[in-house]
Image (cartoon, rainbow, N blue to C red; front, side, top):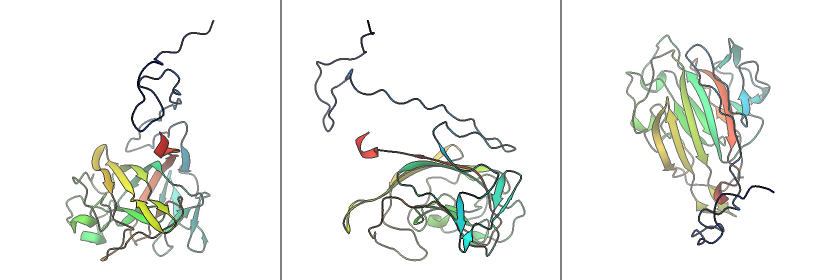
Length: 248
């Protein structure tokens, strides 16, 4: 005889859900094998269900301003080639968990926004700032890990120039009905193991020296990495779509 499922069938319905408290018929969470942590010398391995966007070998999953992504790839990382333009993934994504590792140039040049500048653009629209803000002050809503032009990070969690850093980002995109916004986007960012944004609401697309309202767009978009003219490096980029987020 099959073993009885653990749980109950005589408990009340959880408000806002279709399941009972401790419902024995509720589906079990699916199994995902965790990856391994990165070190300064070596990138880690992604979780078993991740979509690997860059594994250190080539840019076959990316496009550039003229079609082909023209950034340099060597030693397991990609590096911005100034004036080659920003690059975008061929695949498009909506709600998800994103892991990105980056390193600002070890040779320090410039200050404020002119030092190790790049950006991670979710859906190609919403930027989490990449910058070298180790002992380098700038305007707060443009510092490393800022939701650019909107929200400074809770703390400055930067490592020294040249050291590998991590962003782990939980992204829930905006919801539209036709042209009407029904729910703004929300973002959680963990930098180098430190929470720097927790479920922060975005006021609209990010931009420089302006405020932009939401404008209806598709529920998915590409991940974009910015060419801002600095030799920023990236490695170990992967994404886990959060399917059925609203129903989970």
